[in-house]
Amino acid sequence: MKKILSYLFYLYFGLIYIVFCIILSIPIFLFVRGKRKNLVAKRIKTFWATYMSKAIGIKTKVTFLSNLNSNDNYIICANHKSYLDIVLMYLVIDIDFAFLGKSELLKWPVINIFFKRGVDIPVYRDSKTRAAECLIIAEKEIKKGRSVVIFPEGGWDNSEKVMRKFKNGAFQLAIDTSCPILPVTFKNNYDLFTDHKDISGNAKPGTANIIVHQPISIDNLTRKDLVNLREQTFNIINNELNSGN
Image (cartoon, rainbow, N blue to C red):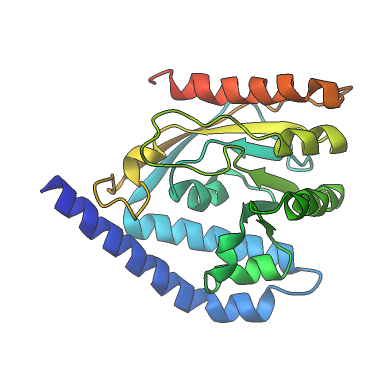
């Protein structure tokens, strides 16, 4: 019975997603352009995340371990094992940011508009050259004052019980731009909604428990400090995942 209910919830989630795509497709197409495209996109995405979460019965409990300055920008690094991570990020971080997302999202209707118009940044994992180019684009966005969201694991598999080793890109970007890292832990999104392709997984309403950690300063760090910075960020998130609270 539990698996049947999970499967029905997957179908319901998909239906709600399609409904919001239809409703918002016209304003996204018409208004996410020009000098105000990032501001307009942020408002639309926040609206989308807020009401989609309500529709599927997902609430959030967010704990901030420090006060974030809305005038600062960050490289936001989070663990990633659920599509809820993307949706809920807009309810957690109340500043403008660009998502670095897999290039496959360019095939998704409506969502691909954000990538094609430069609001978000596609990551091409099959090419080291194009992957490096996406970091150059991200660096330009940071210099404009925007934040950037990166899932440094680079993907997930439902069979994996622990976080993957972090890739270097986010931390190279942080050092090159002197932009602080902001670790975010999604403690139980995986328990609420796993990959829809795994019909034996979890899918249910509930409360997402999210921790926004203290930013990590990049002052005076060089490329020699990259591994330590990467491991520090990994340990902050991983320790929170394993805390059991």
